[in-house]
Amino acid sequence: MKKIKETIVVEGKDDKSAVLKAVDANVLCTSGFGLNDTIISDIRGAYEKTGIIIFTDPDHAGRSIRETLTKLFPKAKQAYLTVSQSLRKGDVGIENAKPEDILKALEAAKALEGSAASDISMDDLFALGLAGDEDSAKKREKAGEILGIGYGNTKAFLKSLRFMGISRKKLEDALKE
Image 1 (tube, rainbow, N blue to C red):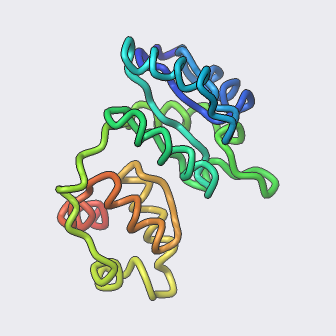
Image 2 (cartoon, rainbow, N blue to C red):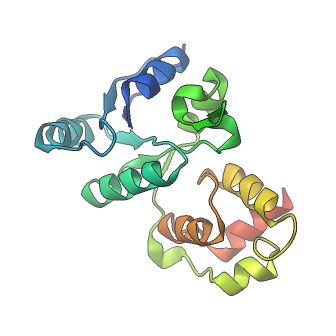
């Protein structure tokens, strides 16, 4: 089993169990939106000692928790799963993912590149076929998987690209794969 040196921060105990089936790592839970001073203190300790990987569900709640944590811990690495990788019986969550998908997401985790590097606009998404076309959702999902930022509707995808500091060139390169 692969050892991950950073502490992995997930939303709940079922996510933690799934991660521990995939990797050998220290895992902390946020208890969803239940972030309190004790949990934040525990995460801060891990952030300062081992570094952390923020690994939340690919849904609205997961994105909100990720944003909150990233503001508190800006140098944290980010790991993502796509909705299709984490979907079972209508439920989206890390706890539903295959161990190999969890391992792949954690191995691909990276720190933010910085918002200054992002030069992408909504017009770019339309021009690249990531918005407004019949197959735009599939293209966004594939690009999100390649870039390691997960999936989102057009606005959420643009926000993720900017949040991760991904340039138009890097996005175009991902679309060529």
